[in-house]
Image 1 (cartoon, rainbow, N blue to C red):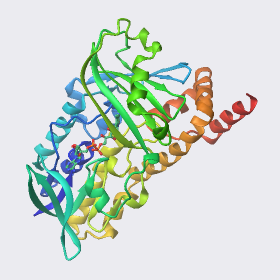
Image 2 (spheres, protein in one colour; image 1 turned 135 degrees about the horizontal axis):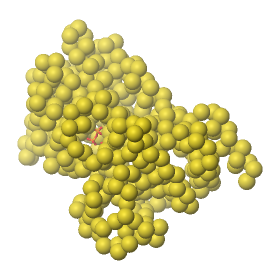
Image 3 (cartoon, rainbow, N blue to C red; image 1 turned 135 degrees about the vertical axis):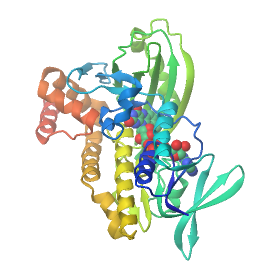
Image 4 (cartoon, helix red, strand yellow; image 1 turned 45 degrees about the horizontal axis):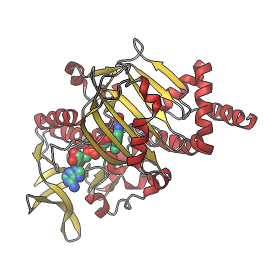
Length: 395
Ligand SMILES: Cc1cc2nc3c(=O)[nH]c(=O)nc-3n(C[C@H](O)[C@H](O)[C@H](O)COP(=O)(O)OP(=O)(O)OC[C@H]3O[C@@H](n4cnc5c(N)ncnc54)[C@H](O)[C@@H]3O)c2cc1C
């Protein structure tokens, strides 16, 4: 019997487990496979250092700039060297292990090779989680249950908290860790926006190693095949300038979906259950960045669980503190507004997106707005949108 059971030991689940275990509560962390590398670009915002200050000592690959390219390969560069702390890029297999070990050091108990597939019930109440472990069924009991097992969650579908994903509400992405001689700026990540909803990326990991990937978004999922989109991006002649001899050694590759419409407010909690991370949409609808927001959701859900256990009240009355926490409210609001920007920017083969790049190149204030939108999930001002609209009308 655990105070809290968490399904999924990714960034969201591991942070949540750490917070609760640190307060001395008994936490079970159920994970399908700790040897799995989550398909991900692995670009991590320095904002997570607030939650993991110890990462500063780990010599992670520092990132101090971004290049964003429009569908016509118009480049917008921005550097935050000497202005902000460096962000970093990671290999998710290593990164997730680091975060998970921090949770285990705090006292959480890991159940590896356990695939959560259903709840355990007593008189219609969910009192635990059932897993498959080497062809055996295992049952774990917990007072509070936290679903953190990402896009493929079986528990989320059975929780009655949300519907199954719809193809028009997600992103589909494919990426690889590669090695090649290259001319990539090693301190900068690059995003290549497409005329359809989606973008390609190149994120350096070390001198020769980098993560390259591509995603389609929302209705573009129906029109474009992600494997083809990835191939087209990787083979695009524009990339010759980064990879002159085009000899790639693939270290690993994978594909995975991600939420694309932001957080479903009604899905965050109910009875003795909370959902965190990707499972419930903590991914920026405009950039696909989800590691930071997932960690914030894990932290706040963890604090909420502690409050429920301390007051011996695990009713909705207490669990709603999760949804109403200022940090969660801020992410919900920002994601809602940036989600509405996606349709606008990609109208007419990305015309507004191209205009946005034009504006940002000539005007420092506009550049700040664009960077804040993509790097920090901050919605643009009304005035900025009006400027884009009037540019469109003049064309
Ligand atoms: C291709 C791609 C590229 C991305 N690039 C970036 C990026 O560069 N930067 C960024 O910030 N975000 C990126 N994201 C988003 C980011 O990966 C997620 O937002 C983040 O990983 C969410 O963390 P999480 O803990 O909620 O879920 P996950 O990281 O998905 O973790 C879920 C965990 O649950 C486990 N699990 C799954 N099913 C079960 C089960 N049934 N039982 C038990 N355990 C289970 C998994 O093994 C995993 O450990 C990307 C996403 C994709 C798909």
